[in-house]
Image 1 (cartoon, one colour):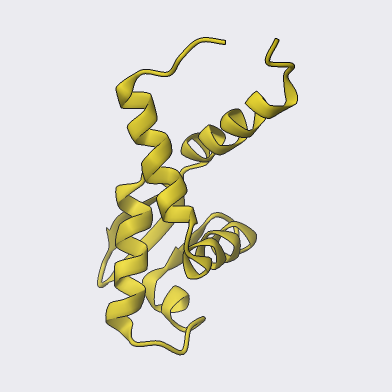
Image 2 (cartoon, rainbow, N blue to C red):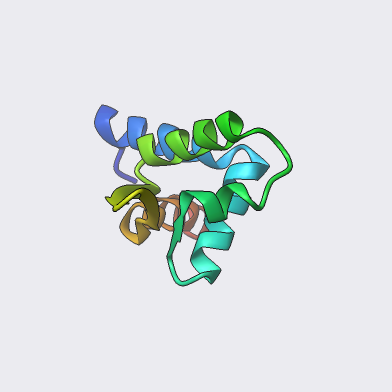
Length: 100
C-alpha cells in the first residue's frame, strides 16, 4: 500500500479531529438531512449551549473543509463539502483490503 504524503496526512488529521466531537457530528448530520445547507441561526437553535460554543464548532468544521460558509444578506449559510467527506470513506476503505 502506498504511504500518504504529509499534506494528505494533515488533511486526514484535520477531518478526523473535527469529527471527534459529537456536537460537530450532529451539526454535519443535521445539515445533511436539511438538504446540505443551513443558516447559522438554525444550527445554533439545535443546541442548548451558548452561541460562542456553536460558532467554535462551526469554525472547526470550516477549517477542516467539511463545511463552507457564505454570507447571504445578514445571514451566514453553511454548506457541506461532500468531496472532503470522501476522505473519511477512502480512509476507512483501507481496512477492507488485505494488507498482504
